[in-house]
Length: 191
Image (cartoon, rainbow, N blue to C red; front, side):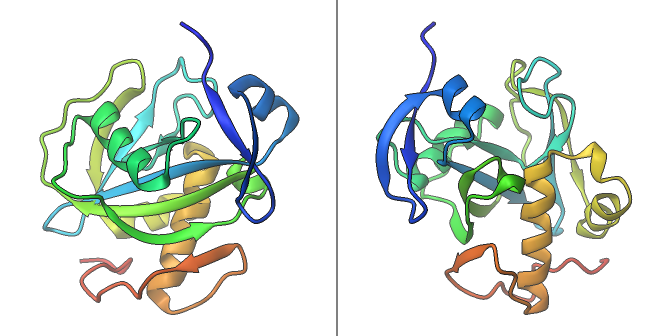
């Protein structure tokens, strides 16, 4: 299998070239990724525990689905693809965009669009990508990210921090763009 090629982007998230995955990560080049958070009707979030064979954050808890954009792929297409590939979720429309994180050390130099959707499962987990997965209350995720951040992928902690800030009405500098305020039904407060 040939190595993935990623679009390399500048500080404005404009494509300036392409490079193999290993080169992008080794050299700290800016590139693109998505995180998708799946919520159920009870407001719980579905998180995956990354496979121990992953080259980045093995065995760490992460978003419902996440991944890099393929060369020439747009963010929305990638979000739908990652849901389908990682947890077997096929949506009739693109997940809802929440906010975009700028490339920084916390994201591994990735520009990241964060999405959300609602689904109840059950899901079909990709065994090479995911060790296990489960539903968590938002309050428990907030507590675990605060007290045991080492159990989570670093980029997920940043995603959760900014989601929490968005819900609280705060603005953090690394958030580049927010499409809309979140409805009151999506909160970090305990049920």
